[in-house]
Length: 164
Ligand code: HEC
Image 1 (cartoon, protein in one colour):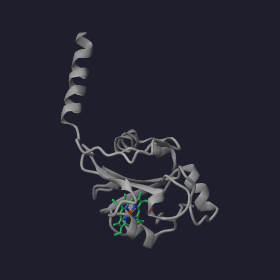
Image 2 (image 1 turned 60 degrees about the horizontal axis):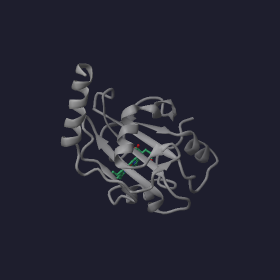
Image 3 (image 1 turned 30 degrees about the vertical axis):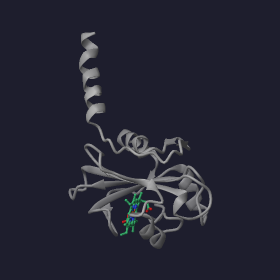
């Protein structure tokens, strides 16, 4: 009991004080990703994407997204980009680590996940959030803050070229 008490109390506290605004587009698990806001936050916190194909090192952001960034591509997206597809398959994911200006400390993440076939902003869920709390995130299918710039700068909303 005593061993359990502290973690349980912390969990309760987190639940009580946690973000009340956690949103869910109701798309469930796509590929291996729980596409709710809470699911994406958990995913980027876990850092499993670090095994994916990535830009070799943090580099200066071209446009928006702060100072230094590093982009990761899941195997499905990498393959589709390699093939030169105009639209990517459902389950394609790209993650962007957002760094402090030191280029070392990760301060947040952006993530785009393809949730339906075809083209158009509503085929993607867009997410961007900052630690340590990730409690004031951009999240949503075809999110207004994200889709315009990505449509203009990318192929099927993906703007970063595949690292070779
Ligand atoms: C002002 C334009 C602009 C806005 C607004 C914008 N982005 Fe981006 N984003 C870019 C550009 C340009 C790149 C690629 C070049 C770079 O990394 O600097 C990029 C890269 C990314 C990447 C890496 C994969 C890719 O597409 O290249 C993710 C993920 C991402 N953005 C997510 C988001 C999310 C989520 C939002 C909304 C909260 C958003 N972006 C808003 C311009 C923008």
